[in-house]
Length: 110
Length: 113
Image 1 (cartoon, each protein chain N blue to C red):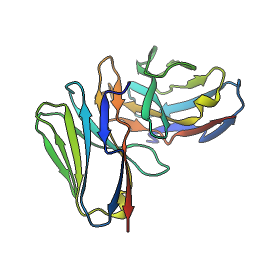
Image 2: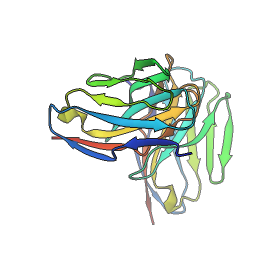
Image 3: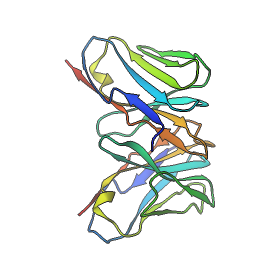
């Protein structure tokens, strides 16, 4: 089964508000990747975090990698309708495999 | 560069039929993979390849075959389609390994009746 878990699975967010989505692994990860999939589209790479405690920002998006490299979060401020979609985290699980979480589907309420 | 291309975009099969989903990339990537996406299940790895001539199974390989005769192409074969294989299939590629940025194709939506 999947070793990367995401919570929550669904979120309804009011436009203009902030929200956070979380990713947890049962094992230490060498890196964590985040992807976004728009409705009807394909996953698109957002960012990769490699270092323990790393924080990276992309405009309104802030990504964090936990100190133990077992968890990660994505925080979005001032949500816009363009933020709608499903956010996936993924981590290498050994043997050349990449494990994706089940995703966090975000619906934005205008 | 076209990136990762997949054909067809949509396909309807009858139970027991076979078919091949095509995937090609023009970025000279070594690592290629196939995922299926089902509601509430996220992306599940079917098969992957670390280079031409080398393939291996992912977490849900049953009912699927792959081959990698060239760096560019990584077709996925359904041997005898079953309704449980109704899904959206994504092909992805990356420069060297699963630890690199994955570039996804547009997907193939498959329905098995």
